[in-house]
Every structure is written in C-alpha cells, then in structure tokens.
Length: 76
Length: 76
Image 1 (cartoon, helix red, strand yellow):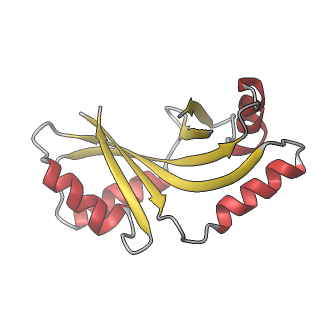
Image 2 (tube, helix red, strand yellow; image 1 turned 90 degrees about the vertical axis):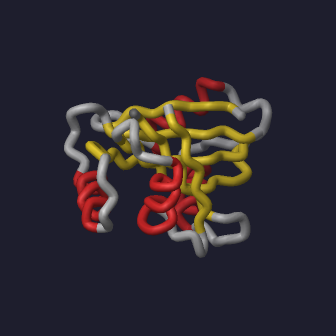
Image 3 (tube, chains in turn red, purple; image 1 turned 90 degrees about the horizontal axis):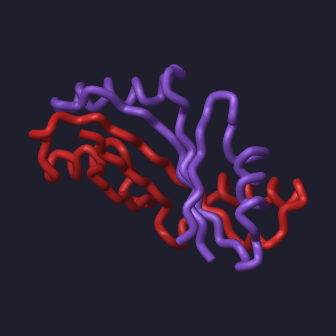
C-alpha cells in the first residue's frame, strides 16, 4: 500500500528555502507570487498490516522534526 | 490563492535520500516498509490572475528538474 507523508514548516518558522525560491521566481519575471513555503513529500510503500500508529511514530521519530514541522499522512 | 506543487523523482531514477530514510526506518525497528521515495512539496500563495500556464512555466523553469523529476500542480 502506498502512503504519502507531507512535511511542512509550522507557521511562523522562518523558511529561507522558500524565500530563495520566491526571490528566484521574481528574478525570472514571474509576478503575482506573494509567499512560498518549501516542504518535503515522502512516499512510502508499506505492507497492509502497518498500522496508523506505526506510521505516526515513523513521522514523529524520523521523517519530521516536530519542534518546527507539521506532518500529514495520507493512505492512497 | 494557495497552489500546491509536488515534485517527485521519475521512476527509475536512483533516490539515495529515500534509500537513507528506508535504512534509518529499519534501524529504528519499523518493519513492513518496502520502498521509500523522497520528494519536495512547495506551497505558493499566488494572485488569482496567475494562469495555469504561468504555474507550469514556474515548475518547468525553476521548481523541478524535468530531466529527472515529475511535478504535479494542485490549486487549493
């Protein structure tokens, strides 16, 4: 089974990577962009018996830094 | 308007970051994971008059390396 994990910076946490992307988009002439936030997207192929609790533990322990990041798990 | 961009490696392209995550999950005792692919997730705040063509150009020119990566755009 495929599982998608989205890791995003919490609101208020500075995002230099997003700022750099924003600046580069403006440099390329793309207007109308007011904010960019960069995150990670991780796709796991897991066995059907892997529980939601296990997936949550994977995110909390390894995939996301819960001090500054939020995560969202979607089973596909 | 919020726009989400998902950037993933094309199938067949080696993914050392995904491999490292997979290995670390096994090291932490999480079984049942057969594959991990790492990607990027970029959230843009854009004006309503930014067209799909513009968004596509942003991805093709800056956000994704289309030689080895695919991208998907979702307007929220």
